[in-house]
Length: 478
Image (cartoon, rainbow, N blue to C red; front, side):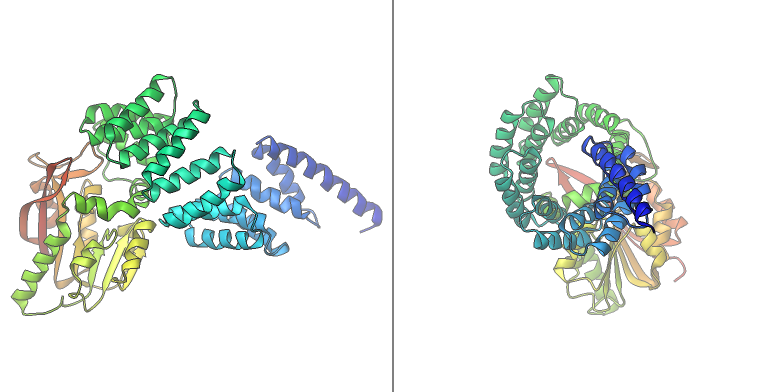
């Protein structure tokens, strides 16, 4: 290339870069991206153009493309803190939490003063349920940025996750006083109160904000949950529907709104289940056991009786735990699973809690029917404790589970009991209830024979017993 041509190319690149930078500053990434794409195809791509392109893709929610663009830029500029932060943000949005943590840690090491890198690391640690570490980093960011509202909100969220409710209340009250028209501090303060088991105060806080004319998804959502906690389901439905209208792509709110409206989708969506349990994993066991949750104990008693009948000390083959959650069934069966214990759960945070117990020999983070299709083994015991409350029609779910059952094996599962004579229904809580007739028909369709179908109290909710069925079945062909 001649000197004149090279100079012309540099001039073009400079103009494109200047225009794209202004557009990004004005928060117009959709207009900046075509200019950055043109820069990307020049023979010599400016380093700043690589960074800006990754930034634009991230702002547009094209997380896979953003991660790839940041990775390409890192090939040219290894160890650049800004690029590591951008790729980490994209990976976090993609659910690649471990990779995002690696990027965040590398960014902090590359630039120990970077508040963006420390903030990213705090966000990833919160997602992984490591509240104390997240609090430390979030606090350091607020020290460096004392007037930054998002930094203080991050710290408040870390306090809430870590159970430091008094610290969260104090901080959020100060933030609300500083920015009284901002909805998020108010919603977080109400959520904090709800987690402190003070639903009336959570209701008061959110209603006051809504009465002031605030229109915000989080306010309606927290208010709805506060009303559910007080068993005021019809009122809660109004606010779940309002929240779902304000966030039409939120699967969690869509499912709860459908339940409130009396809708009957065949099953809860994967996005809904993931949203529930990724956020619930850190406190799942304490809250569930506090409700007197009995299903893992029922599984253990049934296994003890079965082993006594066949004269064995351990389950005669591997065990499959569907919807394993935090591993409560594994804990209940401790010492009885000599041939291996495999767990499947959709929530990555629940799987992380289970893995930390060191009980399971195999874990899969996947939707259970997808994981079942990949498995080759046959299992002496297939357990599904509290899984089928996220399914309406049980035919497909039971057929998939039965296909993995060994000829002489046992399947054990629970369902919440519907008072209807047949069929199934979606309750106001977003959980499905099943009639005895539907369970019996689904067992037959799956090629299973019921050995025991016993009425049981599965747990308590709001002081009231949750009626259910505990089922033990075997294959018809044995």
